[in-house]
Length: 488
Image (tube, rainbow, N blue to C red):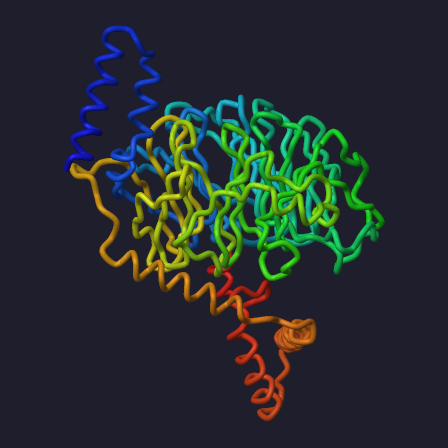
């Protein structure tokens, strides 16, 4: 009660200072929006129903009045979220799941880029002008493919303040640069394991990239993360502006980030990255935790060249615990006018919100019956949009009359998540097991394509082996269509 009275008194103080002119109105708004009391009042505002598959991608336009979503149903939908109205829906042009949707700035919200499981990067230009959540009549949508990766493309990054340039990263290890004016894609960066030295491009030596983010304080710096433990930061001015080829040499990063205890473990990979307005880098690991790095916490251009003495002297990143990130490629994000909070979805179906400074869990909300994948913060107000395995988009706003406590069972949920992480960390997949999984998948695919029947004995043997290996592998790239919805 005393804490709540203090928060109320602080709010009145802010309003008084604004009235007498000692603080700017926007400063008052920012401080109130960033208050812990506001975050603890976040509750379900409504749902946006319309997709026929898992919703994988969300983004607000710069004004915050329009929300765009992408789904396994390969549809792109634009929403007037305040009224819960779908203002536009169109086929993305992708052949498989849509993983990312983004507005291009300074285009009156008429230009949207998308990426998906088919490796395509698509450009969408609507002849309609989308303003104030309304669309003019008799409009149409034109889509075209700008480029392609060999493998899935989970994330795109738009150059801040530029209506023409954006980047994509793919499972092929490449970062591609796009300029809408030229309708062309050029490879600018290629990531490979540090232990491989300067080996040329080969499928076994690439880093399968899952996430990409641009430093808002230095737009030339671009961070990527993927199938190993290192978040790499590249200077795009040093990139190779040559067409993608099979004999490209890997690029050298300008900085590398990784928690000390995860170095050279080869047991984790990165699913999500986000930069704060201050240039801090947030990194989310598969079946591990979330870490916040300041710029002085990097290893430089190579993690293998740093001395043991210097390694021990380096400051450890802030860590955020309680969630679990194993079944899907989850994002991670900031919340608050000055990024005062960190947000993530979880396999337990909860939305976790921590204080950025100190890592204290301040809010946990049940956001999905199965898994919450993505969270998107509103650009102006304390408002969140979330999506996951369910087919709806959920909206969260501080509408509760009371400051809401953490759920009564949150300690049990967090403990279950911790035990799951530890159990999974004990499983080691050897190259022989991985190759056996791939051989089984090729056999199954061939049998399906050629519509042949195999003998009962072979089915039984391979089925038992596949069941055993499947119990070890939580998220295989080549699973059935039902599982594909989960691994988004």
